[in-house]
Every structure is written in structure tokens, then in C-alpha cells.
Image (cartoon, rainbow, N blue to C red; front, side):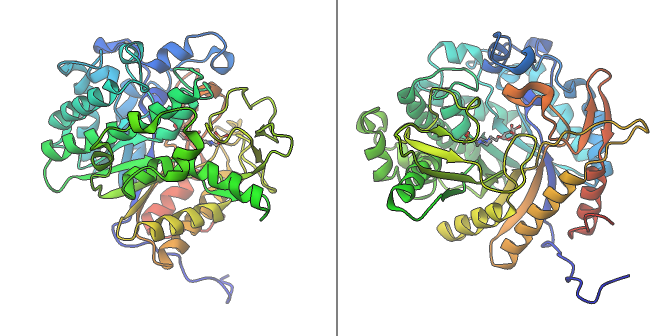
Length: 477
Ligand code: GBH
């Protein structure tokens, strides 16, 4: 029976883009097929000790061969959009020169299949998988890599521009720069804070070059975006030292990207905090910031958990709640004395605190900082210890609660004036969770790896109800 105090239905704006997301190396497999060459993640995952239990993306979820089945599942969920990434190594194996048509054909088949089911393809050009040859030539710390990325963007737009109307350039450049070249927990596994900062600038520049190339090659109606994992930073106390710790993390975690992308250039405090590591005057050439700041149509936000920090009283920063997870190399150049804390409350299987208010705050703060720029939640979701029951079902009420809470936060932000155009659940299906391998399951669809069988979890059914109604379904309907 309906309770009289029941809330009005939380209806989303018309045309809200309900989707799910994946990334090439996490789902495709087929790493040696049709002329594809190794990316830094092939090299990294095949290096002993880098990924838990030596897992690799060699087979992953075999999406390369099973994409028709996967698109059929998306259609069953009623998805309006699918966000996938293009493997650079598949379509331009050395990172230079002409396109490899056989590689592009996979994305032609995939996007044709999506369009045939009325699902909008959303292509990400780069989800962390640099062609190994470009890494060997210096990787993201080398400025030339940004120029190569512009050429790759041009080639991808020429080939797929007739089918893909919404593009995101980079996924989470913070991870590429600071986990890849700072802490080294992601490929290519390098640990030099100066290189991490150089990588960040060259990723920004790569985005700028890609926007220019995409605008030149695509119809005017095409929409361009970037996906950032902006850290929702909170200080443990209001003490000056803790507020300053939060400011530093905001600088090297967020404003190093949003500064040049949205606000005209790199912030002065970031340059001051990191000036002992890089010479910003030499790193940033005249014209770079203007190129990076070329207008985009949407800003993609990826959100999982907030970030709680304090000053490290003893001067030794790191992770207060996960001593084993904190590497000796910091992913936070210029903020090495900051201590990270686990906020109180429940966590996911990743050990990340569950806090939908963080998503509300992230959306409303971003909307206020850049009025007029529509937002897209390009990733949100959670890993839980899902198990396949004897009756062949996967029951994941915790994920439903997580998604319900975070979508309620998105809805509240929209009611309060934020222009959020869509939501992409991470992830469509369980997949290769980077340095955790296949141990962490983020999917709405369970993958039984020994058989590659797909089993929609109860969260998938819940999400489908929400998508069909364009309104939040009750967690236990
Ligand atoms: C996303 O990354 C990825 O885009 C996606 O490929 C991945 O599968 C998914 O999330 C789940 O992990 O580094 O100490 O500040 C999210 C990566 C996770 C990076 C949280 C920042 C905070 C801990 N982010 N992390 S710390």
C-alpha cells in the first residue's frame, strides 16, 4: 500500500541519457587480433607483480567477439546510450601513421549494432591504453605524445564520425598521469613526480589537440566532452593546516585539469606547490592553455567516493586506513605530506566509502564554477562481492542501494538547478579491474569467467525499471 508520506516520483528530465560504460582494455580481449599491437596495459599486466594474481586483459570479457550479445543485453535493459573506449593500438597500432582499417572495422561493427538497436554510441578516445611504441618514445611525459593523440583523434573522427555523435577525449587524465607516472600502480608503472606533472600537462594538451581535430572532421552537431575524476575533497577539521592539505589535493587532483580546461590556465598555487619539481614556464608553451581551453559541449564527471584529508602531523603522508595500499611513491606531487582518511560509514568491496552526498556536492559545485556547461555523469557505480547462486541468479541489493542513493543525489542536484544530461553506470558488465584484475566486480551484468556467460544481476533489472520509467525505481519493488 502506498504510504501517504511517500515522496513524489523522482522523474528525470526528458531525453535524459541513461547509459552504461566500459573501457577497451577492460572488456575487449582479442589483444592480438586483426593487427592490434600491445598497449602499455598489455605490457604492464604481463609484468609479474603488477596485477593481482597475474591477471591480464588477454581475454577479458571477450567483448570483441561477443559484442552482439552484449548489445542485445543493453537493449533488454532499455539503455539509451553506451559509452565504450577505442583501443588506440587497434586502430593505429604504432601510434603513428595511417589507420588500420581492420581495427576500425570492429568499432564500425559495434556502432552499427548499437544504432540498429536505437542505442547512442558514446566513444572515448583514450581510457589509459597508450600504444607501447609511444611509451617507448617517452610516453605522456613527452610533448610529442600530445601531437600523436591529435592525429589519432583525426583518424578516429574520419572513420566513425558518421556514426558517433558524442565523443569524450580522455577518461580520467589524473589516473593516467599520477597513477601511471607518479605512484606507478597503473601502466606504465613509472614513479617520477616530475614526469607525472609533465604527463598531466601533455594529457591536457592532447585533449586540446583532439578537440581541434574532432571539430574539424565532425559535423557541427557533434558533441565533445572530457571525463574527469574530480576528487570531492574534504578537510578532516577546519584547522588551517588541514584546510591547506585539502587545497593542495584540490590543486594537483582537480584544478590542474579544470584550470586550463575551463578557467583560462594553470592555477598559481599549483605552480607554487610543484615549482621545485617542474619548470612550468618551460613546460607550458605559449598558446597551450588557449588550445586546452577550447570550448567543449559537455563535461563528464566520474564519481565513486569522496576524499578526506588532513595534514600529516608527523610529516609522513599517505593512506591512514590502508597501509598496504599506499605505495612509497606518492601520486600527489607537491602534497606528499597529506594524510588520507577513510570517512566513517559503509564501504564497497574496493574499501571506498559510500557517500552520495559527495556526488551531489560535486555536481552542484561544478555547475556553479562553470555556469552554462552541461554535465554528464560518465561513470558511477560500485564493486561488491557478488556470487552466482545455485539457482543461477545474482542478487546484489547493496549495488541497488548504491545506485539508488547516487541517482537520488543526481536528481536532487538537477532539481537544484544543475544541468545534468545523462548518467552512465560503471559498468555494463564485470570486467578487468586494472591492478585488481578480475577480483573486483562492478558490473550490472555478472560475467562467469570460465564460461563467459552473462547473467544480469538484480541491479540490472532495477536499473532497467528506472531507465524505462525515466524515474527512480524503489530499491525493493
Ligand atoms: C574508474 O577509475 C575508471 O575509469 C574505470 O576504468 C574503473 O574500472 C573504475 O573507475 C573503477 O575503479 O587514488 O588514493 O586518491 C576510478 C579511479 C578510484 C581513482 C578512486 C582515484 C581514489 C583513491 N579512481 N581513487 S586515491
